[in-house]
Image (cartoon, rainbow, N blue to C red):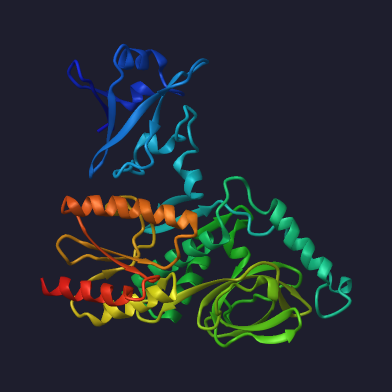
Length: 415
C-alpha cells in the first residue's frame, strides 16, 4: 500500500494524496498549487507505525519548483527507512541517492547464502614489488607513504563505505555462517572459521574485485604470503604489542591455526588496547615481513556467542544481563524498522513490551553522537508512552549510572 500524505485544513475536510502523485522527478507544482492555495494545510506522513509524522510546505520566493515538503528534524516521530520522503534531501526538491548508495552495500541471496558487494576500494593499486627493488628488510618510508597517500586520495569513491563498515559486514556474514553450521552460540574461534568460509564461498566483492583475492584469515592449509601484494589480514591479537623500533611495534595475530607477526607503525595504532581483540590489518609483505599501510581496526568479541560489543561499557552491561537468568538478549547488528530504524545496543525480546537498552558511553560534547542520542531518546520515549517498548538506559558519565541501570533491570524482572 502506498504511503500517503494527509493534508489537514481549518476550513474544509482533510485530503489524502500519495507520493507518486506529489513527486515525479521533482515536486509536482500543479498538485502543490491545488493543495496549498488559498489555504496552506498542516501535512502529515503515514509511514511510521508510531503515528503521523509532521511536515510542512515551504515556498521559495521565485524560480522553478517553488513548493516543496520540508522535514521537521525535531519531530518526535521520524520517517521510516521505507518512506519515499526519507530518501529525499531535507528542505530540498532534489532527490537523495537511492538506498543502495546510502548503505554502500548491495545484497543478494543465493541458495540460502547472502552475497554482498561493498562499495569501497580497499587499496588504490595492487602492483607487484620486485624483491630486487627493496634495499632493506623494511620498506622505505616513501614506499609506505606512497601506498597510504594514494589510498587516501583515490582509494574510495564518493559512494564510500568506511573500512570499519566492510569489517562489520564480514563479521555479520561470518557469524551467520558459524551459527548455521557450527553452533547457535559460536566460540570466537568458530567465528573466525565462519569468516574464512565466507571468503571461500566468495560471498563478498569490493571495488578492488573479489574480496577473497585480497583478504586473509591465516590458515596452514592456505598459501597467503605474497611478496609485494597488499592484503587484509584478520585474526585475534593474542598479546600486547611489542616495541620494534621508535616508530613501530610488533603485533602478533592468531588466525585459525597459525600465528603471524605484523609490524605496525605507531600512527596506525588505534586509541584502545589491541590485545584480545579481533583485528583487521591492511598490510603489505616485504621480504617475508608484514608491514601496516593503514589504521588497524579492532573489535571486542565476547567469548560466549562471539557477540560484537562496541565498548568496554557494553561488555560490562552484557555480562550483567547474562547473569540475570531468564532474559532473552539480542545484540542488534543493523538498524531495523522493528526498532524504528535504529540499532539499539541491546534488546530484551521476552519482556512485554520488548525492552530496548542503550548504553550512552560518550560525553555530549561529541555533537554528532549527541544529536543521534537525542533523536533516539525522543523516538524511544514516544514509543514507550504508547506502550510499544520499554527503555532502560545507562549513562556512563553519571557516577551512579550503572547502579541506576542495574536496579531498573532487576525491578523489571520482578514486575
